[in-house]
Length: 459
Ligand code: BES
Ligand code: MN
Ligand code: MN
Image: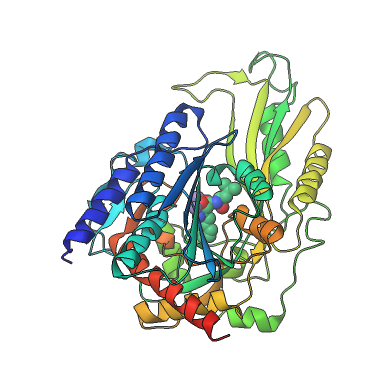
C-alpha cells in the first residue's frame, strides 16, 4: 500500500500522539495525561476546529471543541478518550509500549501501528480529528460538531459524569458518535448496538496480625490466600452460573427470535480458540460463545496477590490476601445493587478466623440502542458506502460507562461506530491498530455526517 503525502502525515501525527504515556490509572503519569490533553486540543484546532478548550476536573482534564455553523442545523457530539490502560506486563511487549512502530502482520499486510492506545482509543479518536480536517478541506460542514475527549474512561469516567450533569446546555446535541468499539472483520463491518455494564470490586482477607512461619503455624490457622481462593471458587457453580443470590433477578431475557437474529453474525469457534491460544471455551450452560460474552453477565478475577511472590522460596503464611473482581452486567441490572449483593454474599462465605473487607471501585450500567433511528441508519449507510457491504448489528461485551449516562442525562442515544478488531489486543501487550482500519475510519466517518444530515432533511 502506498500512501499519499497527507496519509503519511496523518500516520506520523498519530504515532506522535501514541508516544505520550497517558495512563490514567497511575498517578505517576499525571503530567503525561495532561500533555496528551494539550496534544488533542492542538490537534483539533490544527484540523480546523475554531473553538477548543481544556476543562480541568478534580481528576484528568476534558478536551472540548466546537464547530458551530448554524443553530438550526443538527449537532453531532463526538466522544472518545485519550487515556490508556497501564502497559503492564511490560516484558511481554515485543517493542516498548510508548515507542510506536509499524509492523506487517498476516492480518495487516498494509501494516499496523503497535503501541498502547494505538486502537483504544487514541487511534480511533484521531480518526475523528483527521476526518474533520478532510471534511473541512472539501467545503463547509453540513452540521454542527462538538468534540468531547476525556482522560478518565479507563478508570470509570467519574468526573466526566459530573461535567455532563452540570453542562447539559453546552452539550446539547442530536446524536452522539463514538469510535471506541470494534467490528467483525476487515471485510465485514458491524455496528455495536449494546454494551455491558460493570461492577468492579476489591476484596481483602485478613488472618493473623503478622506474616507467620509456615512451619511453626501451618495447619493451625486459616491461611488468607487459601481462604480467598476457596471463597472465589464458590462464586460460580458447576454450570458456570454466578451464585450470588439475586444476581440474575433483573437480567434482561431475550426472546428466541432476537437470539436467532443475533446468531446470524458469522462466528467460527476454532478460529476464536486459535486467536487466543486456548484449546476449549467455557461459560454459562445454555448459551453460545457469543452470547456468553455479550448478552449474559460474567464474573472474573482481574488480579490476585498476597504472600511471597519474589525470587526463590520463602516459607510464610501471609497476614493478608487480595483480589480485584469485576462483574460484567447486562440491561436492567443495577450496578449499585449488584455491588451490594456481591459484598453481602462474599462476606457470608468467610470461614471463622478471618476478616473480610470489600470495596467497590466503580461501576456503570449496560446500554442498548435501537436500530430504527436516523443515527443508526446513517452509520449503516456510511459503512455500506466504504466497505461495499451492509454492516451487521452486534452487541458488545465491553463497557463505556458514560454512554448510558449520556442517555440518562442528555436524553441522547450514542452510535457506536467502531473500527477495531478483537485481534487488536486492546488492554493487552502488543496492542495495535491496522493502518487499513485507521484510514477506513477516516473515510467512513464523513459519510456518516453526510447521511445523517441528508436523512434528517428528508424527515
Ligand atoms: N473501548 C473499551 C470498551 C469496548 C471495547 C467496548 C471493545 C466494546 C468493544 C473501553 O476503553 C474500555 O476498555 N472500557 C472499560 C471500562 C471500565 C474501565 C470502566 C472496560 O470495558 O473494561
Ligand atoms: Mn476505549
Ligand atoms: Mn479500554
